[in-house]
Structure formats: C-alpha cells, structure tokens
Amino acid sequence: EVQLVESGGGLVQAGGSLRLSCAGSGFTFDDYVIGWFRQAPGKEREGVSCISNRDSSTYYADSVKGRFTISSDNAKNTVYLQMNSLKPEDTAVYYCAAVASVHLVPWALYDYWGQGTQVTVSS
View 1 (cartoon, rainbow, N blue to C red):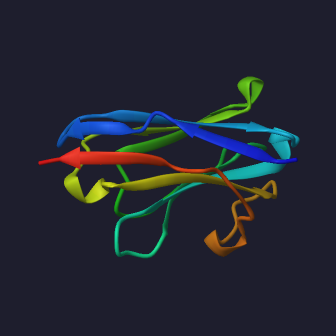
View 2: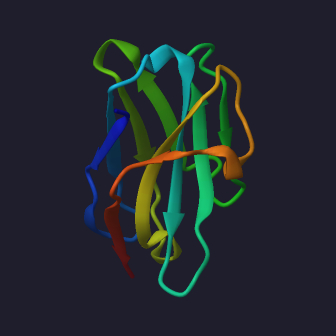
View 3: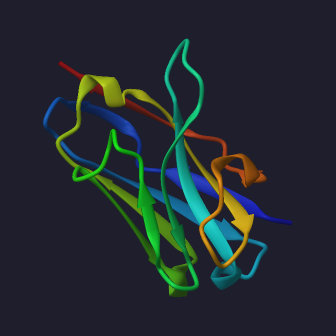
C-alpha cells in the first residue's frame, strides 16, 4: 500500500523559511515522481513543484520559482521542499502526491496523496 506522510509545516513570518518532508512507503521510490501541491482557503489546489526520483528532473510553478527547492533522498524514501522567502500568499495546506512514472507528468495524473500539512505565513 502506497503511503505518503508530510511533515514540517507551521507558522512563519514573511521572509522566513520552512522545509517540508514527504516520507514514502509501500512502493519502489525510484519508479515514482513525487509532487508538492497546495490549496489555500477558497482556492483550487495547484501544483507547486515535482521531482523524478529516477533522473532527478524537476519542475517549479512560476509562483515559487527561485524561492522553493525540491530534492529527494532516495535512500530515505523522502522528498523535501525547501521554502525560502515565504510570502503570505504561500499560506495553504501543502500535500505531497505520487505517480508511478520515471518522467515528470501532468498534475492531473497524480494518484496517491498524503494527508497534508498546514503552512501559515504571517505578514
């Protein structure tokens, strides 16, 4: 059974940093792409960043490019999202998700989800 567990959310002031973790189990980590999504109150869920655990290719949404960094530690079956220069508009529940693929895929194809972790950025 594929399981994803996020951690690392919290409350931070604007300009601060947080690092989110997504620990995976129940699947062959190298054969999956892991993505980070977020959903703010009253807004649709949006894809933020993703990484292929096979070739380490990455993608970032324009809204976070240059501020967020995604990385993977395949030995620990964990993907990280380092978030710097946080803004109040980054406030959301952040989810990690997985899809069985060695290449990056469209956001709609992710089919395994974690429970989410709250990130709140105060102004």
